[in-house]
Length: 298
Image 1 (spheres, helix red, strand yellow):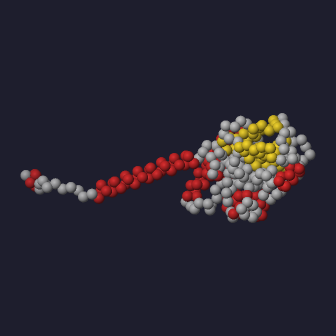
Image 2 (image 1 turned 135 degrees about the vertical axis):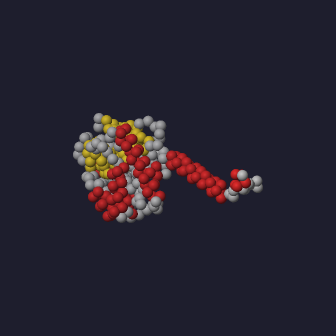
Image 3 (image 1 turned 135 degrees about the horizontal axis):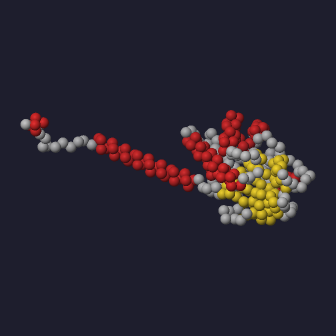
């Protein structure tokens, strides 16, 4: 199963106390949708395709470790599973800012694992399109999957270097927050591209066919798109890969409904309180036909 661009919100994007509410809601949403996807697919391998944090590259080390702790609370797994962790530009820098070398080292220390991770007859090769580093291929007949935060094949020279060194069967990437795939021939020339939509059939990729690079959609509702979800793939007989997306429900619709209910409630409380104050402050009407108490008794 593939998890792309959760980008948990940092401490500086929104000032307290609203930041506590926003972080709580987005973390809760990720935790809930991840649990549904995990239960649905029951995957043997989890691949986190980077941009785990929104402010990892600019965070202090204390904040960085706090974000890591939040990630562990969000992506909870109750059974043994292989996990593959990759950094994104929001984790270590590199897109609109310099690469933060200390964050690169810290990410590698926190998520300490080799660059090639094998499960049965499937090998995952961790390629870093930010630092332009990649492992070399292996002399076996395993099904070879390249995983990267940045798309690899759009970088002409780097993509050819990676492809020649590893000779993969398929690529998976993230970064663009979109669900799509591109197809290239063995010479890395473009053939086709296609956006994966809600009603698309399962994508089938043959081992000896053209090269596919699959873009996994973001799993966070904060990324400006309503097509969010988790990717999943299965390799059959070491020859065939099938891929699909489990789409998550939209969140902003619910938030707008909650906000509308809250606004109506506040208006009701305001009007009710104002009417009570006006009623209490209005002078009491006196009758001119008053009779002294002693006169009534007599």
